[in-house]
Length: 321
Ligand SMILES: [Zn+2]
Image (cartoon, rainbow, N blue to C red):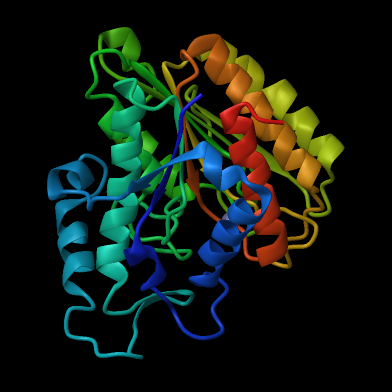
């Protein structure tokens, strides 16, 4: 099993202030853990290239893209441009965001071409709150949506499932899926995308609980959700939908902020729950998609549990115990 690990030095240069939880040290914690456990030696290291405008325009409004690329150009060190109460850009943010989306597209190309079996994209900034024309929730470009659009260029890929186990609802991904790949397009000869999300509710961004669409499977779960309820929700809501859809590729929004040690949320998941969902998604990929799976980092803010859980996640992707 060849598993790619997509990184870029640009991911370390984007930061939103000294006390912001979405900080470069998250990636250092992951890298340190992968080296300490030996998992790093299992991986094919890939340096991300930036997305081009055409790749972004498949899922984002062109005026929005131009705005993100222009903000920050005239900032100096330590200056920030605030886009929403918790989302800011420094002079390196646009470059990092381009490399995050580009890295995911690159991983998708490698997996759909058969050059890699699976990939994990250790990207910053994350992407699943980024809407078609709006930055929010630490996100600028929707990395998984850019990846899905890239995958659908391949003649072998007609159906892409995006699955999101971050503790927050992937409202940006939902917004883009609804605009870009409305339900039932596949029946009309077009592309088809399924979006499955589990999330704490009610909780930021307060969306998803009332969405009704055949290609969107939202599973709101309350505060203090434990692993048994999380696993039951995946098994009873996601897996039947994924089996019926039979994706040609799985793209994962992998957020680890529902861990009991992570103060970002009130969920109480443990390391073993993230290992379980990772193995389960690999089984879905093996059953329907020739094993093809591309996973992208979203949230996860408590560095020790983030490092451990990403390590377990990647070991599942690699088929290692
Ligand atoms: Zn999150």
